[in-house]
Image (cartoon, rainbow over all chains, first blue to last red):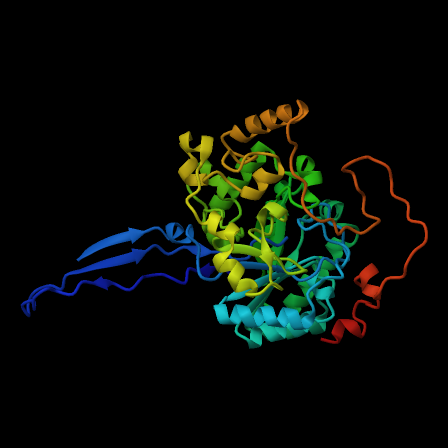
Length: 46
Length: 414
């Protein structure tokens, strides 16, 4: 049983706009993805 | 929207608030005397953590939100309080994965294990045949392991693990190991041999040849995530594409060891004062050591790759295994002794030449808990003779299986 990394996707960091954006404007955001790694945590024992 | 991908290993390099791979050797007592034992186990250490102290550590791990512990030894199941500690851990939201030679996995125990969602078991087996296995793990150990596997399978424990330490003698049996695992509905886990503990004495004899390293890599690549590796073969990534898992030495960052007397080391394969962070009995316990010890803080700093940084494969193997380098006398910022580019062989030759000319030789692992009757091939010096004999404090100090009969009362008394 390998363990999926507990952090698959970090919360998106959303910048607060300086002024209210128009209703139809796309939200300005930077999405931070952390690649998923399958970790076999059972190391260190024979 | 912009998207940026951050490699997870970059997060891990700076350490985490709690270890992902926490190995806990509960006891040095063992009914076997495996030639490659990474902790030189055999005899119980009288300073072993008590049941209450172990529970206090588990309380701490729960507070730290450690997901699970990897329990080993020695043979952990010979501790009289082993099942009590397993139950205590799972009741406190700390999952348990334990490694055993199978000696106490009776049908009744197997049924109880199969009923738990939070306990995983791995049975150690270092040869698909008794001939290969018992040469390393001792007479009868192959039969014991297979009996335990049959008991687990009969109890309906799907997906237990079969753990194989890869050696020169068993690389040719990889397909047989996989077939065995499939037969029992188990998963196969291959682990890299390290020159740690008694393994330092048999490293030259047992570690796979360069050709076998390639054979192993190709075999693992072909099977992908069908075979577990403990993420221990990242040095082989220098052959080409990375193997599944964490391709990074996690010592002190995501990995550490608590030994039977509560000493905390950066890595289970690095039992030496150079990698000792402190003891869980000290004020602040394990959490303080993990979060603030000088050793772990240092290991979480960016590490220089030394001569390896000029190698085209450095980004893949990252210099290999710290413990393998240390116990073969190689500098920690140099190549792994099994470097697939051949740099390890050159470095070993240089280290041997330096040692022959009066330089430092390879460090010895700390502590030897071997049975007094174990063969000691290392020094060839005088044989110690004991005159007179103080009886052991407890029968299991001398023989961890004292009072145990397979399928007898103790075997079913958990």
